[in-house]
Length: 235
Image (cartoon, rainbow, N blue to C red; front, side, top):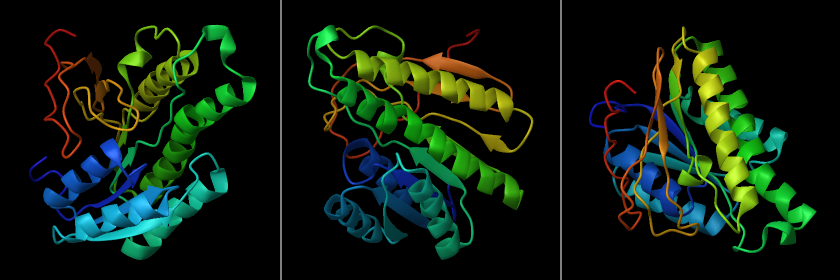
């Protein structure tokens, strides 16, 4: 990301641990002026803030339940109020259920996963894009998906359904904003050792194309994201 985020203001959800923390630190190390760490866990979030500040970048923690529209809007407003703008966002917050039988998933469990993994991405996209369009400065938004978004995952139907939904939502957003300066790229990760321990895939989208790339399934510790793999030609 060298040079891509110099002096940018970045917002990362689910940044109190795992992939979110790793990407927040990557933004800071690669020149971001400020990283806003959003998480429902204040202990993990504030720990990430201290790690970011140790790199020399500014950071601020915002407590946010990303399933709540008012809190999401306030999260973006707090970012803009503190730093004057929002240039980049990584919508990463997510949860999963312990593997179990397809018919054993309770309705409340299903709804919770849908709310955190899918509804929250739409709420965040909506708030972030509204600001980026209003300031006429454009921006880039990253959504965390999963290999479960393109394959079936026995024992975890809610997680698979939501990650399929994230891919569809992201492709739609990329098409809608294809002619303006809001882009919807994805970071690509290998399988990681994190709270969810899930393969993450990426939809890499510019103003004019959307391509899907699956990376290798080597296990890595989420200290820093793997480098993005280039899209295959002709895909």
